[in-house]
Amino acid sequence: MTNPLVKRRRRLGVAAAAAGLLATLLTAGPAAATPEPGDTPAKRQGVTTSQQEEARKAIRSGEIPGVDEIVHSENVEHLANVPKDALKGLNTDLAFQGKYAFAGNYDGFRIFDISNPKQPKTVTQVLCPGSQNDISVSGNLLFLSTDSSRSDNSCTSTTQPATEKSSWEGMKIFDISDIRNPKYVAAVETACGSHTHTLVPERKNVYVYVSSYSPRATYPDCQPPHDGISIIKVPRKAPQKAAVVDFPVLFPDGGNPGGGTTNPDLSETTGCHDITVLPSKDLAAGACMGDGILFSIKDPEKPKVIDRVQDNVNFAFWHSATFNERANKVVFTDELGGGGGATCNAETGPKRGANGIYEIKGHGDRRKLAFKSYFKIPRHQADTENCVAHNGSLIPVPGRDIMVQSWYQGGVSFWDFTDSSKPREIGYFERGPLSTTTASTGGSWSAYYYNGHVYSNDIAKGFDVLKINDRRTDPAKWVRQRELNVQTQPDYL
Image 1 (cartoon, one colour):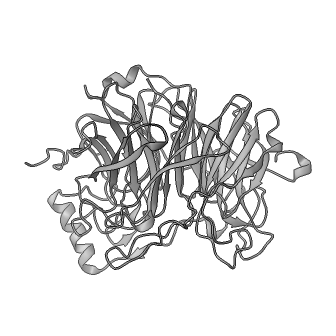
Image 2: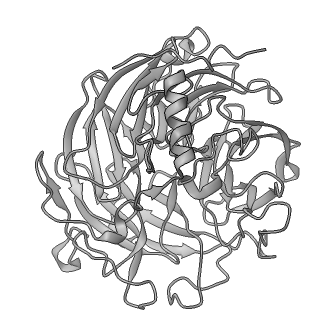
Image 3: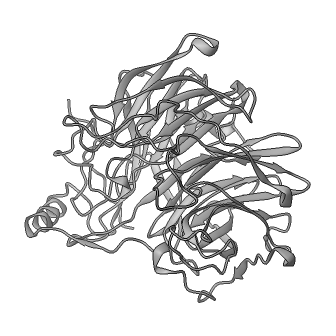
């Protein structure tokens, strides 16, 4: 049976002086400093003549949208787009608090007023280069991940080889009590930097689980084996005292060795890429390169692994995780190709670069993860479009399991996995390829549902606001959050 969504409907359309830390505030206009080359997107790659012609043919036939053309299903509206401004790097992750959205960028971060979702307004932009600048907020504190080797921990640092002992990577902490004037108040260096981070907030302290990976013997601050995560404790009233309190080993056996003849793309486990915590259930799910793990966080300083799974046939890189509302399922994503590959095509197929849906069986420390099925968007993309499963969140609908999720240049997908064995897409939004002649990095990095709307941070095109009008998702409109860091998953209902 043909999926009606495959036929696309087109529509045109720190801060203390003694610490030497400085954040540069930017207004609309040219940036006051230029990020170093090491923090800019990868150069465009050429594609074959036949691949270029295939892309053009697909556009002519209507199989894929034209370059930069916007298309979406009938139940999805595109309400707004705010292009990049002073920060020219890749747009990355998102966080929310009250009427504000916080958008990461390889060059720093941008804060939007989203009180009117149809007209988001820039509140401020902060220049602070250091990929990826994944972002989260808790109370008056904002957290920023730095996963590129820098000359120091300031916002005026430059790139410096990781082989030099003086190089710095880790977590930066800002005070956002004055939303228009964030102040850089602390920095904590962590082993192998901070690719992503996850907050475990408590009343007096915020614990930060730092995910990082890929150690090398030549890196003084990123030595193998790197088989765990860094845990930072941040006192809310004295964030300048933030410090690493432990480095729990999650893979005492070293984790998945990777590779192999059946799946040469399979990653070796040398740390975690991303962790999602569910504080209401004292649970966490880790996407750790070659492994997926379920662990208890009853003691946030001493996380305990409950179960561990591998998929050595179809998964290449365990990237992120999402619990359903009842905490009896986890969706793991596979970032085949590292986010830069064109993997949403017939050649790659529906099981690679996809989501893996796992059910949680049993109770307490005897819980086990049981694989049920894969989900991948049903729309093929051009060979010039990077496309793979990426960041998403639940849409909080009582009694149903529905997600919204980014797929880079595959766009934003709304999908239902209430039946774990038969997930299906119920809506989508996407742009056509950035180019039909070169493989360019772009598309939605993160797409999250927050207080009735979906916000997407497009790597190249800026900040998008979407709305889904569907009886299956309409009940979520009544759910309101004061704060949302998707990797600190709330008990929505």
